[in-house]
Structure formats: C-alpha cells, structure tokens
Image 1 (cartoon, rainbow, N blue to C red):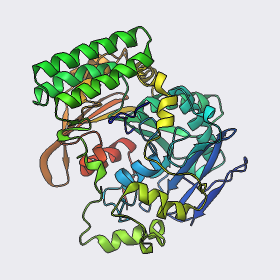
Image 2: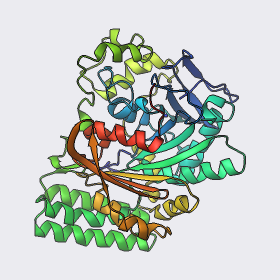
Image 3: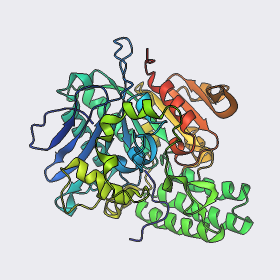
Length: 459
C-alpha cells in the first residue's frame, strides 16, 4: 500500500527480566537511564528506554510522576521521534533540550506497536491488527517493568499520546485500569493525556474542508470536493467498512493536497515538507548551558565525541550513534521513523473511532486530558471539539458551560492558550501550535505537563 503523507505521527528503568530479554543500565542515581527489550508475546520484542529525571523530587505527599509516551502512525517510533525530536533530554544534534519534559516527570519511551522503531517481530504474522492488541502488548510490557519495582509502581503513571497514539492510549488506559483492579498489574494510573489525537476519524475528515476553506487554502470547489469525500467516509464508518474508509481517506488527502498546493496537514500555515518537526527542536542554550550540560552528562555519555551525526538527521542518528550506544539492537535491524508494515497490518482499524472508550475512561473516574494545537489540520481542534461534544459523560453539559482560563508563559503576558476543567475532564487549547505541540510551543507545553502531573516543585 502506498504510504500517505499524513500517516499520523502518532518510554525506561532498572528491572530484572525473567523472560531472558536484555536490559542495560546507566547509573542508579538521578539522571540515570535504562533500556531493553521485553518479549510481549513469543517472538514479539518491544524496545523501551527510561530516563530518570535529574529534576526528580522525593516527596511522599506528591510522588514524582512517570510519563509513558506513545507516538502515532501507527508505526512511528516514540524512542526516536518523541525522544529526540520532541520531549526527551537531547535533540537530534545531541544537544540538551531546555524544554525537556524531564523537568516535570521521568520519561518512558517505547517503540509500539511491535515493528515500530527498534521493536521487532520474528515473523510478520505477529504484527498487531488492532488498537486493542497493541494495548495488550503494552500492558504486558508494563507488567514486566513495574510489578517488581517499587520505585516505579509507587509513582503515578501518565499515559501521554500524540496523534494515532491516542487511539491506543485510551485502550491502554482501560486495560491498565482493569489489570490493576484484578491485581495483575501494580501501578497507580495518574491519567490519560491525548495530544492532537486521532480519536474520531469521522469528525476530523468532516472538519478539513471547512477549516482549510476558512483559512484560504481551499476554494469553494475544493470545499465541495472535500465535503463530498468526507460524507462518503462517514457513511463507510457507519456501515463498518473501515478498510474502504481508509482508502477514501487517502483519496481525500490527495485531493486536498492537489487543490491547496500541498498544504501541510500538520500545520495549515505551511506547505508540505516544511513541518518544524523536520528541523531541530532544541532551544537556544545561553547562560544556562553549563548547568544544563551537567544535569544531562549521564545521558550524553560519549555521544557528542562521535562524528557520525549528519546535521541532525534522525535516521542517521538512530541507525548510527544511538544504535552503537544501546549495543543490544539486532545488527540487521534498520530503524525507520514510520513502519509501513505496521500501518498495513492495522489498516482495518485505522478509521475505527474510540470515542466510546474515552467515555468509559471518564465513567471509571480516570483523569482524561485533551490538548490540541490551533494550526493542526489532520487532528484539528474543531474536529476534536466535535467528538468531545458527542460524549455521553454525565459532566459534559457543565464542562461545555464553563469559562476558559488563559494560559501564559513566565512573565510574558501574551496569550499562549486556554484551558478549562470539570471533574476528571481537562482541555487545553494551544495557540500558535500545529500537530506537534511540544515542538511548536515548548514553554506552554511544559507548563501544561506540570499542571497535569502535579509535579512537586524543586526545592
């Protein structure tokens, strides 16, 4: 199947494995890291990488949180993209990232579903075919990592997902909840965080034409064509024809690209190929550079002395320096930032909505946070609001009637976004950001994560 330009872009600790899988550890102190493989099913190997924050605060009243980062795709690499291009300690030039989410939590990156990034299967029929199967594998991973490790299972785990990863995250949230309730998993679920997430494909495709017409990237002819294909997708989804809906989705994307002079589906202010995620996501390090370098010295190790980093190219980095550092990646495995094999295996589930699962999370009392970038197309804010307003959750009416609060960064009083919360539903509107909120608006994204995880302040 031809890969679409908008395949959605869609986490690690010291632990002993009993299934023969490999793990590597760097130091036991704050700022340590560990990584390894977990055999989540026979011949299906999931790679994980955990960073223990150098900002960690030991406060029994407010335990230091852990963020499990799920990338999109399906088939994109959280160990690569989320780690080096979005929220990890280092950027693709192996320079410290000022806006790393390690300032608010430990970070646990995984390459999921198996077949993504450094994860692999020994036989191709072992790829997962549904979000539910992907969530089951992740639950198995969490059981192996958390159950026998008190420093992990006593900290709240926040499942943070971007793009298609959101569909898997809601399934994982329910799976974790059930596994904890039944005693099969020892951890405290802090909440599920959905960033620009592909929860309701129908609502998103219906939003594309009106949004792009309103911002002048489509004319009325393009709007009519977009609406016509979106309605076709809506009907296909209603009739359970999800494979056909995926094919029509591709047709719709192609039509929009042709009629908008290749608008970037991740940011409507840009043309395709101009997305900021392809650029370095590091912030300029000024007078704080020495202090930051010291904090991340354990992560840097001897990486910066190696010379095969090609101008921040992620593929070169992951298949070169990082693969050498990790030492346990199979020699014949080539890291890729999105696996077409994984996407193809999950094609029948791609357009299936998971709105009802969000309702179930809320009904169980699990905290659900939604954040969305103002400039995103693929998972537009208007599409996200549309599926949220369809929820059957008992608090929805009160949530909709609440007034939003403005978001700022530091002493800057420019409005960076808005937020509102009612009971266990929270929504963040992030201004000036596209699909990749932590890249486009790192300051407000970091502030948001601190509010969600309730990270104890550094003393």
